[in-house]
Amino acid sequence: MNEKADAVANGKKRSMRERIRWDYTILFLLIPAFVALVVVFPDKGATARHVAWEYFKEMAMILPAVFIIMGLVSVWVEREFIVRFLGEGSGVKGVVLSFILGSIPMGPLYVAFPLAAVLLKKGAKVANIIIFLSAWACIKLPAELMEFQFLGWKFTLVRYLATLVVVVALSEVIGRVFFKQGYEVPDEALDGAEG
Amino acid sequence: MGRVDLTTIVILALTGVLLLLSVIKDRRKTLAALRVAYKGFVRLLPSILAIILVVGLIIGFVPPKWIAQVIGKNSGALGVAIASLLGAVLFIPVIIAFPLARSMLDMGAGIMATAAFITTLTMVGFVFLPLEIKELGKRFAVARNALSFLAAVAIAVVIGVIIR
Image 1 (cartoon, chains in turn yellow, purple):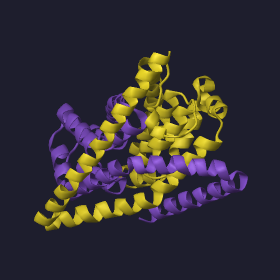
Image 2 (cartoon, chains in turn brown, orange):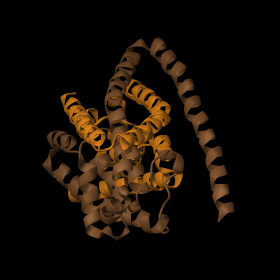
Image 3 (cartoon, chains in turn brown, yellow):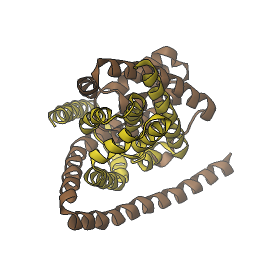
Image 4 (tube, rainbow over the protein chains, first blue to last red):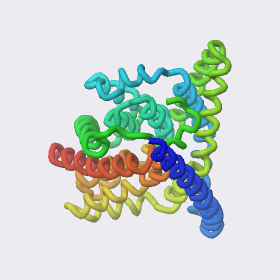
């Protein structure tokens, strides 16, 4: 048991260091590439700059708040509570709740990952978290209104219903086939959070 | 951008209220929560900045017209395959994506290909994959994206068969 724990801890340290280097490397390669492209192609570059800036502003506003919510959930919400409503035995109730949680319009998909991580860590079922993320990604009320406007009610309705059915089936398959023994979120994802 | 602003205001207000309640109830626990929040934020920051740059480049340098033409020209299974792959790789906000889908249809793309583009675009985020791996682990992220891709294609086929 101890050996295993040690091995896990070592593996974790190594992979964490590797990852930190990775993302900084990519970022520091991207910055000059971005600048070069914007300078060489001022036309397209202007759009790229504008879009990046808009996203940056959005991120700067939303992301700290989302992480604070995640921190509060990790400290205040009891594990038993998450297990009861989203855990293995939560059944249909868990499916419906995951869908509702995921449909709340709270911004882009990257916002959902830390929340999904804290829910998984507190004992939510993998299938429910897949539903949560899928709903977050593709069912958003403001987006549905736009879809309705541009592609018609028939397209929107059929897509909505098909998504509902396929996502629920898919999440069960992923949960049963790939995560039969449950799933441990990588520990460094939630440094310092209580389980 | 009005929609985004409203969302932002709601999120900020909600966070403020929760934080206030937390401080009132237990200051030490609140500090612990903020520590978790800070660590998570700092850890993700470089990846998110990289994603923002990539998204900017994609939207700036991949003209919507080109996407509409490529998907509009290829019909049948090939069109669906190209549309699904483009949707999975690209990242386009819905504000651009739905009008784009409309113009694809107008340029002669099949309903199935258009649906495939919209479903993979929303469900599969290759741009977000590094971030998802970081937060949720490789196994989870890869399984979810791979099967979401298949699911998106399945949804597209259902739409294509029903709407004729």
